[in-house]
Amino acid sequence: MKISYLASLSAVMLLTACGGSSSSDSSVEPSPTEPTTPVVEEGTVVGPFSTGTTSEPVRVYFDLDAGEVLELTDEEAADNSVWDIAFQRTKVYLNTQSENSVGAFFTDVNSEFFAANGAAVVDSFLNADADSELDDYLAISTTDIPEDDSFVGDTQESVIGAKFYDYDITTHVVSANDDRYFIVDSDDVYSKFRVTDLTTQGRTMSSITFGVAVQDTLAGDTEFGAESALTINTADCTENLYIDFDLGAALSATDAWDISLACTTIDDITGAEFDIHIAEDATALVDEDNTYAAIDSEAAQYYGFTSDVTQQLAFDINPWYQYNLNAGHLLWSQYGVYLVKTNTSTFKVQITSYYDEAGTSGNYSFRFDELTSE
Image (cartoon, rainbow, N blue to C red; front, side, top):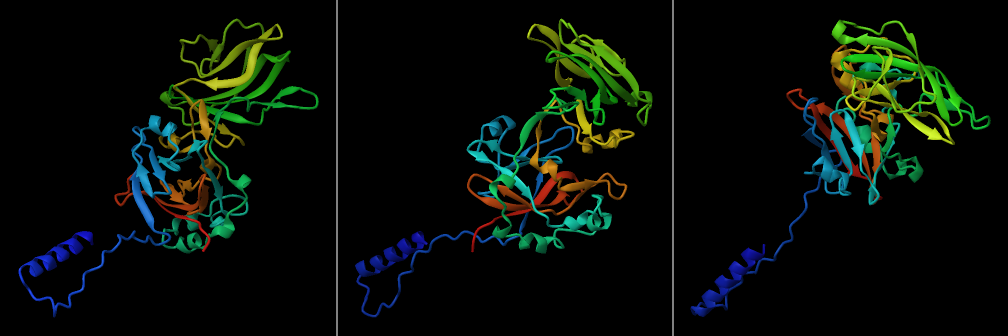
């Protein structure tokens, strides 16, 4: 090192100054050495990184290039382009800054974890661990990187929005999509609804009919009740409409409501916009195939309920986990390998655990490596 080199040189000069003989001095001055960067073996697992609790979640922002966590508040992260991927409870987020617009691609590694009909192969999940799935991870290389348009980033959308209707671009007719269900969690009541009919006037909605089934957990309901019809007249409205499914009525903005319809005037015709929003303190999910006959309130956090305007997360398209496979409220990783593309590099990422050694949830461990040509 440079300090040792200078110390040795000073000692030689001191001996010379004191009359010491140098004719037989065969000492060799040490050469300074450069500090070396530790080599991290491919597939090394990092973590666990705590994302807090359900009641007090914390988002962990990770810079894949530097291989480290960035200490950022959510407000700071919103304008920060350095971080690439973030974790918060069961969710995985990608940076959407223009300077670092991150996309993800899900490889077909470990596709055998699911049967041909899409059902999870339980034994595959229960018997897998970080060691058993390492080889599949290591097998992913630059040859597996797809075209740029195959990568998907996070986008923002309304949880219900315009999903309740269909629009025919040929006839310009708007009709109810009565096969698509939505579930709203509001004021300890779960309301499952679909739009069974709607009428239009010009480019506004003049009436809308809902089919609604309610599960009131405070009243002891353990499943949704029978569906009932609720029709709301929106023609010639004078203000926004706020609807409570439990009461089956339109209320005022200051009441406890579940969904709202904005009143608008287009080409001198007044009616409701083709857009549904939920209350600020409510959450909702889309039940595409009328799957849920009931909501388990203890496990509601794992159903995918989101706020009114939310991000459509790339990792949600191909979730990294399965829930409740052995009748326990646990998450099991598929050990799928994601390719994460930043503005400068492409990395492979595999989530290996959601728990720390004590079994505490929300603690992410994962492995990642940059894919480079040899």
